[in-house]
Length: 140
Image 1 (cartoon, rainbow, N blue to C red):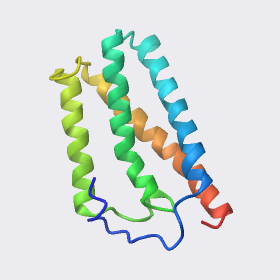
Image 2: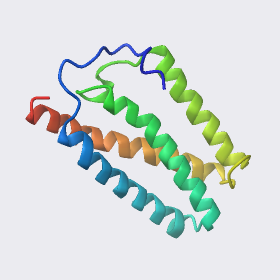
Image 3: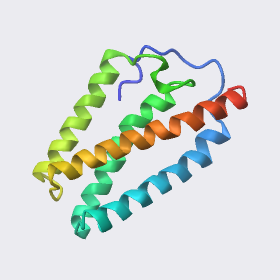
């Protein structure tokens, strides 16, 4: 990701907060567990396809998480730099195509890849609200 080229400057306050450590890890475990459940029970994916499903979820989530981490307010409070936005779009497109065509990982059907993309985006949006409230409460 192109953090260096982003429009947002450095934070004046420290970034080593309890919110950034334990809570974010717990939320990732919840997100991953729900995704595994949906992939196995709803989509009836094989083990190999479930691995692809999980890898895509982790990649998409990491792309979207950048937008939450870069902003102390709601992530939409500031526009990202052009390079950051292009890097995100590029990564999402490349990995979506890898997941659909199964070039180096077992293939998924397009609706499954789109589901993972949407799920990752919605989960990321959902955790932005408590992040903002926690930062506001602790004066961060």
